[in-house]
Image (cartoon, rainbow, N blue to C red; front, side, top):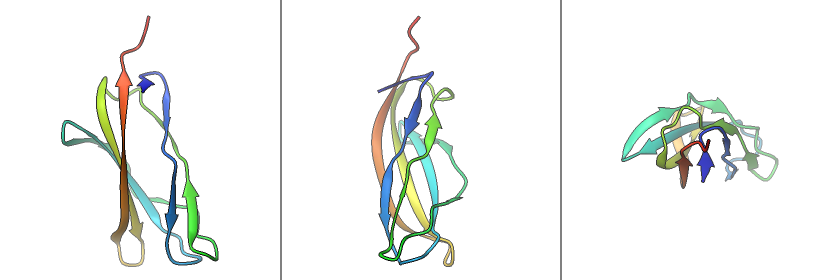
Length: 97
């Protein structure tokens, strides 16, 4: 759970082609609707074995209290198409006074 004045860290590891720079897009879904989404952003290039990790810190101040799903989509920039996705649930709590 996160309070509205906190940040969410979205950590993930991706396994793809060696030495490739993929992109990532994140969507925040509440009640089945996308309420916020990022533009595609470059991931760190995969290593010689095809592995990369990413852990962006996302402020949740703009999100209303409630249950959310963060969906991560990895995009192959050469093809412009998604190659992997994953999701996790989280909750934004009301600020405490």
